[in-house]
Image (tube, rainbow, N blue to C red):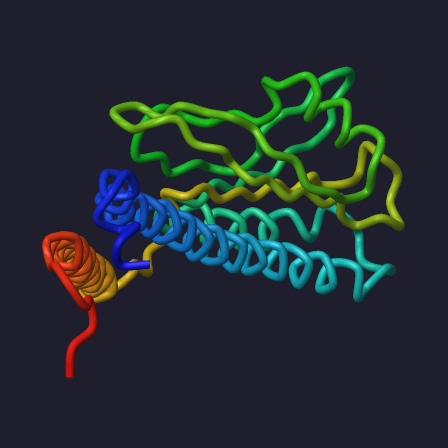
Length: 220
């Protein structure tokens, strides 16, 4: 085995640490992406729960006139819209189009989900649901906005309902991965790379020594 290491396999062994380093870098990137995806999903679940809770409050009193809910619905949704990188809005269907009836608090270019025909088609056919829209904010990179919509109250006719829409993107994530996690990953990769390289060089050196020895290869 040692004799073989000192021959044609030498150049391939030297590539192993580089291959290991590349595989670890890919793995750590995949892990980081998965963590961010989980954080985004948690953020999305938060707004879904907030909208559903608002819907439950509206539906709790079916005898109340629908217009009496408007101020409470708008105030609640505007509170969501003020949160960092969260989109939220209230719409009414009037005539043949949607009209925004809540105030928006944008830090950059206003985002208007009802400008997308596929989203409009979905909200006109479903009571609630989710939709993803690709969007580029001013001075920011491309992002996917994960939207959730819900009609309320469902006991009222279409022209007496509110359409509540809320959305989050990767920019909405406030919690970040601690710097020591990334540093620890790269430090462990560097140490492993150095140790593997040293070990392979030692094996190659032993192979060369084995080849140069004459007589009995193994001595007491």
